[in-house]
Image 1 (tube, one colour):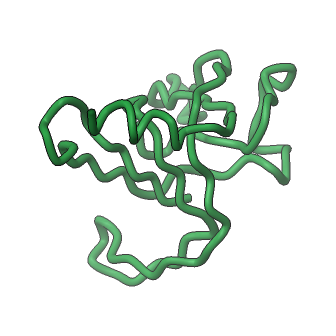
Image 2 (cartoon, one colour):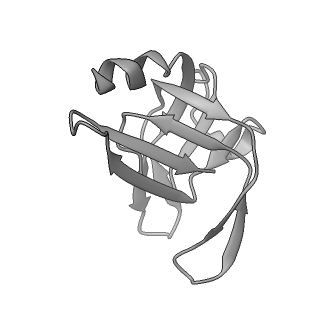
Length: 113
């Protein structure tokens, strides 16, 4: 029941470019973009990053897809673009939080960008 309720709230589309590490020249490697279902909230959230310093996110994205830090995500279908770093609508993923739903039927992914 919780999964259905959570999934029904994922009524928006986002485009995700998964981070694949760095190439031999140190350049960021991103996989081809895919669309995912999500709930996108444009709001600032203060959080502590892996460097133990405060950072400010521009948006919070909720989804069921397991996303990776340093990947990119953009609101809407942006799959026509291979380089998200040139798109104002695409944001670098700064933090990913995973929590089980109340009944344990799925994971809730909260992404700060």
